[in-house]
Image 1 (cartoon, rainbow, N blue to C red):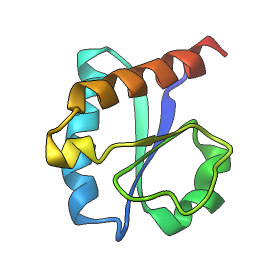
Image 2 (image 1 turned 180 degrees about the vertical axis):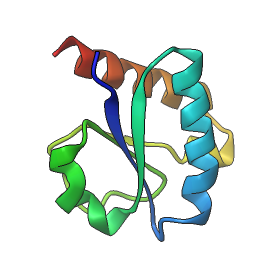
Image 3 (image 1 turned 45 degrees about the horizontal axis):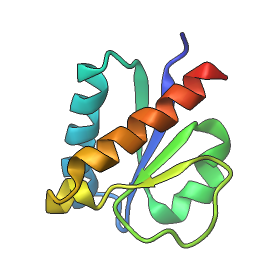
Image 4 (image 1 turned 30 degrees about the vertical axis):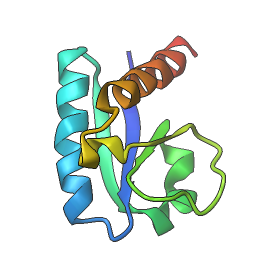
Amino acid sequence: VMAVRVLVACGAGIATSTVVMKKIEDLFKRNNIDAQFIQIKIAEAASKQDNADLLITTTMLPTEYRIPAVKAMAFLTGIGEDKVEAQILEEVAKIQAK
């Protein structure tokens, strides 16, 4: 199984995505999902999407992407975190089924 390539984006690409990164890494580890994470600024998402399977972001999406995008504000607020985790796992399952 190929590793799932995940773009993790926040507005500036540093502080918030680090917190989110940790939570996503833990989520993938708990579910035995092999993934490669790339931390980016949201502005870079459009140019990097062709080499990725999934976009996880803590910011508003400025545009539509060709890859599934999951808004993960919940990882910062702690509200509805389980819903977001379920959504990420669902997207990963679809990617792996391809």
